[in-house]
Length: 105
Image (cartoon, rainbow, N blue to C red; front, side):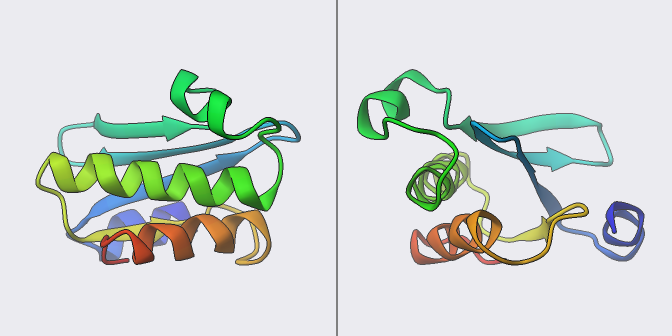
């Protein structure tokens, strides 16, 4: 999945990783190999808002946060890299929250 996204897209990439306890998202510029924006359920402001990081509420909070940080950095369009995960549950909640916050996926 990731190779196809890297090869076919000219946009920045919103990469998602989920573990049993937490959700992580970062926007990556593949041309320069740098992470421009990142958010996770382990971030201190989000930990106070969400008690457990492994559910849909935490994923939507991470999606909203990464979209807000991206808009502050001037990023409006990204391609969604869901890795090997199905577009379901926490992954879908993160993507939907990012869209609602103003990021174009």
